[in-house]
Each structure stands twice: as structure tokens, then as C-alpha cells.
Picture 1 (cartoon, helix red, strand yellow):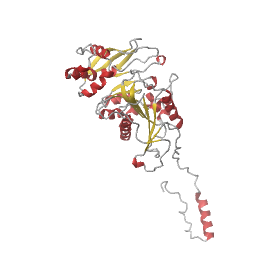
Picture 2 (cartoon, chains in turn purple, orange):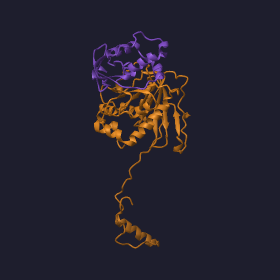
Picture 3 (spheres, each protein chain N blue to C red):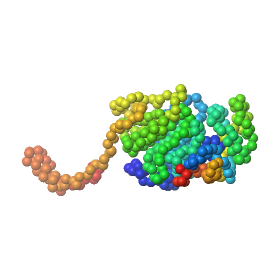
Picture 4 (cartoon, each protein chain N blue to C red):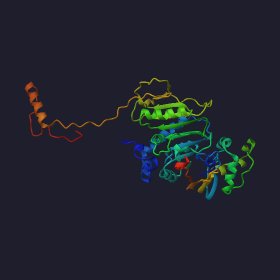
Length: 123
Length: 283
């Protein structure tokens, strides 16, 4: 699961007011090479929750992403885009869990697939 | 298919390892899924600016439809309820991210984040509520403004299509059903196209004739399409019945008939041991 997806996921449990962002418990991270596409990055940037992304990247062991939300001028810098690309698309959580910030309920991640199935009482 | 799979078992049980592998190795299914996905992508009417988008594949299964999205340069997130199907998707090393989840439970995505959603041959599974807690409603809050969702469905009946469409309208989506090849029972494909909020200026309605008139063209190969807004009436498609095999008229009857014809004066071949002999079925 890439951080791009993690940035979009939120806990769907009944009664949870703010299920975003899900905390990450890391067991195994792998890196996969993905083609660099600046158009995609610029297009997706407004939809990304920056703080969540930074926190997530730190928990995965990558600390080079700047904490303050970048202004649009930074999107023109290739250097920044490369880091953004790496964090968003190339870091994969293979094994671990996603934790709902409100209830603490864990969604296990196996082989890169998070299990988001809710139990009967959580729907 | 003689029997609709969703009447046999819920999807996470129907698509076990064997079925999942069978589904994905069938070249016919691969071909159909690819075509449907291409068409759905077309109906999404994404701006043709070459910018890759983030799309959602609801009921992505083994990734057959997702591969079409990747081939067109997009990033995607796929959701499916069957672990077996997702395992096959992993084997095929699909480029999209996969989620194990139940579309009837809510997609679990933040509002307004995806640029479009497709679903190929999946939403009809929702119409059979297998669990008491299931209120099968597909919640699509994650669609960005002006984004579209295109669902290719096989509705079991008019009632089912109305159910799906009605639920979508009540939820506040605009849209309708696009039917490809409406006159051919074999090639007919239905796409439910929903738009979230006011459409962006660059998107246009899917091509086709607007209105309630069904065009009576018998020419299937011309790619006859229709865009009907909220189409309710359905051409009752007669199911291909099996030829009802009568008990058979038997030798006696044939001989009697031949006698009648002789009395009339017609030239009738003589009766031999071969008269009214049972022929091979294909004959």
C-alpha cells in the first residue's frame, strides 16, 4: 500500500467522527521504482493532506519531507518533486497495520493489502 | 452464464481460489473485461490533457479492469471483497493499490479525492443483501466535484435496474444509463453513469441519442448507442428457450400419415424398415 492510498483512507467505523489519518504500525516497508510523472504530482497535490503525509513518511522511516506545507512555487522545483514522488508512490507498506485514531481498532496489512472489512457491529 | 453467480453465493465465497483463477485465466473474460473497462474509461470523460488521474476501481477483483486504467496512464485504488481475487491481482503485479473491503460498508475514503470511479460487473452483487446488517448502498462521497462514476452492470431485471438507479438519484447524483447495442441480447451492455455535483465545463454528456425514443436500427455493427436519461422501460428480451422435445410422433403416426397421403394420390415412398427410424439428434 502506497502513501498515496494511505492519504485517502479514513476509518469508516460507525460513530467515528474523525477517522483520518490512520496511524501506521510498520512491520515491513519495501521500495518500488515508479516512473516519475510531474503532471500527476502537480494534479494530485491539492488533494493531499500534507501533515498526514509527513507523519506517515516519518513512521515509514523517511524524514526528508519538509514539515511545513509547501507553497505552489515549491512544486516547480524538481528536487522537491522527486522527494514528493518517492514518498507518495515508491514507499510501500507490505506488512503492518493501520490504526483508527479514535477507536484504536487495527486494520491489518498483509502483502500490501489493508483489510478494511468492518465487523457487523462497526457498520 | 446459465445461472447468475450472485444467486449462488456471496462474492467473497463464490470467488474462492479456484474460481478466481478460472475467472482470470479465461481469455474470453479477459477480453470482455478489457473492452468494458475501456468503454467505462471513455464514459468517464476525463479531460484529454494527458495528465494521469487518481481513479477508483470498485470491485476490482483480480485487476483485469485496473490494468486497463494503468495502460491509460492512470493511478488507481482498487477495492474488492474477495481475498482470493486480490491474491491473483498481486500475482499479476498490478500497479494499483488494492484494498480488501466491502463496497456496501462504505468506501472509507476522504471526500472529494478521486477524479473518477469505475466498476465493471460488480455493483449487481450489492443487490443481494447477504447479511442482515447490509443496507446495500454505495457511498461515493470520495468523488471530486464534477467527477464521474461509471458502473458497468448486469441487472437481473428491470426492477433491479430501477433499484440501483433510484438509489443513485436519491443520493443526489445526476446521470443516467448508457446502453450499448441495446438490440442485441448478446452484445448489450449497460453502463450507469453518475455525476457528482455540477459537471465541470470540460466534460460533456456521453455521446448518443438523447431522449426516450429507441432508435430502431438493426445494424449492430455500427455501434448503435443510446443515451437515455433515467430509462425505465425495458424491451422485454425473450430468453432463448430450449426446444421443447415432444414425445416424438412415432412410427405409427408416420405410417398413418403416409397412408393418408397415398389415399389422396400423392407420390409417397414405400414403407420399409427404415421408415420413421430414429435419426441422430443433429439431423
